[in-house]
Image (cartoon, rainbow, N blue to C red; front, top):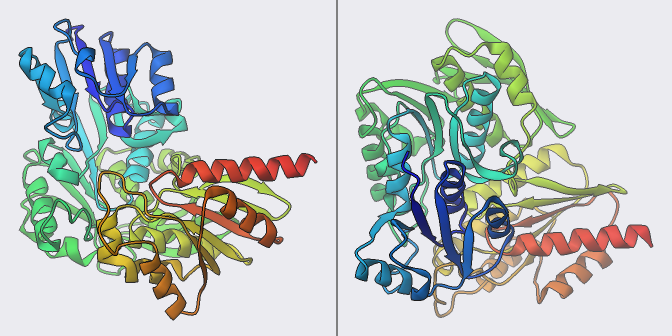
Length: 459
């Protein structure tokens, strides 16, 4: 590989950071910029990247070979404009990922929800099986030294295939995994039919002889999967699936279940996570183990030792009967799956601090969010995290709050972070489970709350 100089616009993003780390490990000179300093930018600096805070044209010069950007970067970005003025190569992150992995035996994990966890599960399985895979995942994983990628020299690559802005269409998988298909990213897609058509196209672009591993419980996937001329393996709880989950049991913060097909029953599978959605994710991983002829005992061992990806219902604190989780769920289906998974396990109250993500998503699904959050005994609603969007008139967290009131749920529109922490401290009781949920900076509030609990414990 040519040892070149690469500049990443928005290097602190989880997808960009994985690519940046890959090129650092391959000996390239890596530069990049982001608007704020984060744990990710600090990590990349420690690995040798030069990072600027703020996007400025002066950061780009003729010593750089390639400038990488994502769909979130606007056309008026000063660094992109400067790169084009200098005649530098500019490339979308998704296209660069395709250049790296498409020549490998590629396992691509797609879906509206669950793809990060499932990618990490499959990646860990291949590592444990000695296959030394290259891995790109959309979250920080302790298995990969806390990063979002793993550099392997084997013939396999495992990647999270992101449907946002149709990015996954640059990939040519040998094995395609589809966890589910739901309405999301309606700032990109016209409607659900547009989303399903794009997933169908993604499947069609897989390599000749590819396998399609998909959740057969999902009606949206079933609406198009039969039109794909590839080998198919369905999985799920439904009796009609090729791989059927049976004897499901949730207790003691763990799942136990078996997987049945027409030939055999694969018993006593244990996963140290919560929720039926994670039983589904681990069964997708099992399907990959069958395609690659990885022994059952190796799969059992690998999945039982799997620990969640950062911010995927991650236990951050446990003491005096109180548990605190940090959870990335930000789509109404994810919220429902995560909270229902907890409900299977706990006897005490579930208190959810929820930060809606995007004005458009809140506008389109506020009723569904309220219904999902209603699994909780109490809900504290933060202001909407705007991410890439500008405010929409009349769209606030109060839309969700009003629906929760209709459902007779104990809920409050929370103020600043100190107000929320004080509310939680004053109201806490033994056996409470407190969940900080959302894709924005609610994770920082979770960290502050945990520090407060730890400080109070010492005093």
